Length: 151
Length: 120
Image (tube, rainbow over all chains, first blue to last red; front, top):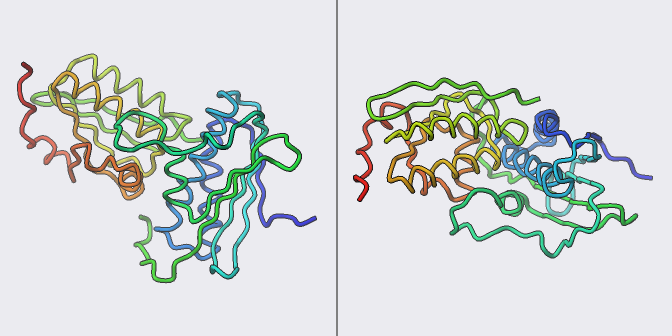
């Protein structure tokens, strides 16, 4: 069995979102992403977890969310992979898509943010059919300009 | 956890200025909504929301601001955002809302924007 470099298992409580963000930010920097690459990754994962809590679990706060994080070093370069697994059953994956941004209205931005910020986004049903697996990958762009510390 | 966003609400010449502080995500965006709804209930001609102290905001916070913009626009009144920090500016750009809102670099600039045309 292959273990992830880093795993977090949290309850579906929104108050833990900031904890996950902090850990992810630290790891993404360790894996070589620049701050201006880290910020969108952190936002994307926050949005994905919020979608699980809000839409998948209907705001129930006692459901599990598993976050697995790995460094990437493959043909596409170095980067970070984040895998989120939940226990949301009966989800129609074909209906997960971003909305038309020409409509200015509250909500519905989460999925758009995922696709806009990450290099790959893969929604699949878990192999045990007990929930949804979301794999997000972001590769470091060597030409990405570094941003100032603290921004 | 992300703490409840801090805020101060101040009366200005033709409206209200709210300054928020702290990270805003799904855990505390209802607090943001509550504060802004209270402000909207006072029907300010100009509502300035200063985000100097907000280093991070996710789409749940942005949704609250869109609601506020819609409320003010419907009443032919103004909503102006000021001092968006890097990460907050980022989500506005990703959501293509940076051209929908009136956004200024600072509060003084926000006060100088001409008032909305009178309601017919």
